Image (cartoon, rainbow, N blue to C red; front, side, top):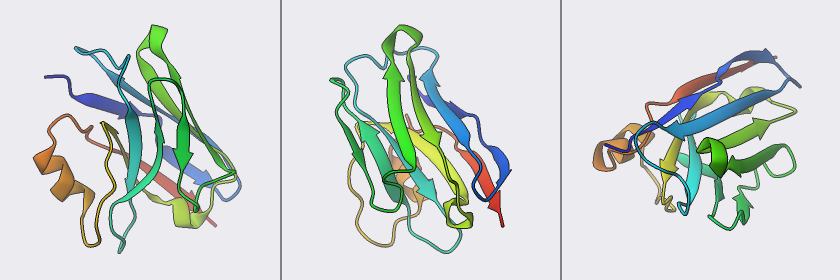
Length: 128
């Protein structure tokens, strides 16, 4: 109940753009802080951006200036616009309500097992 769903992943070349969407079919995202995490091969689960209910945003240094998070409460959707994509951005991207900072060594699948509202993830592949 209230599980989030991601869409918009795909394959692009370096320098390309994608827009990810996050929505919930049977719950409202209004007044909910939403975060985007990613799991890159060989790396820990990483929180890359989050947006509060008042639209305050935060970005990881690795994506700052290239990614833009936004929300449209009328559409019950949170977006992650990803521009100037790099091969290092290749990962499975997850959206989650009430994001928290993770310690070292966590995989997103491990975290998702403890937080059932996380989405299933969407693959983003950036080729050089």
